[in-house]
Image (tube, rainbow, N blue to C red; front, side, top):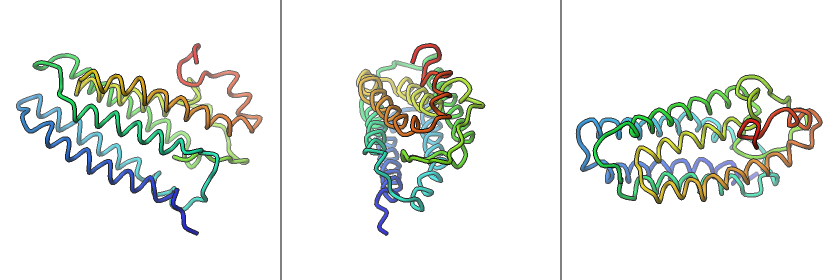
Length: 215
């Protein structure tokens, strides 16, 4: 069976890496000193993150196609890509070097780490596609003891850090006006499938989606 859904994440990931590398060369060519060092470091960390999560994308090739996803994977990936591209392609507006650069690096590292811990906690239950799994055991430990979708928190925090480091207003608007809404849509689609299991219904009564005590 032709699994185009399985191949698409791999194709998008490769294209994303090529775009990041090309834009990074242009972005950093006039940087120097500590700014250049941390700019290269952050780009390399981002690429390493993509590599680590590529195992999930590869696993998609061996799974059946799903209609529960409703195109949210592509929408979510596109919004992520536009956020990163806008941060790299627009002129950086921070003058000199300061605490916000370190803050951006810290947020990026914290976000990626939190996301990877959340993915590890889910184990084989984690997927880039929304699927209905009747035998799925709800995870309530680790980050999932705090909120229902910690991996998305990690994703948003990491990209907030990336945007702060390569600061421009356009990328912030894209992050808040495009990427964040796409994450919310993605969560709502996931939950429509998850709420078909009684255990998740009970779990959802005790944990908020993204922000404790709020949503």
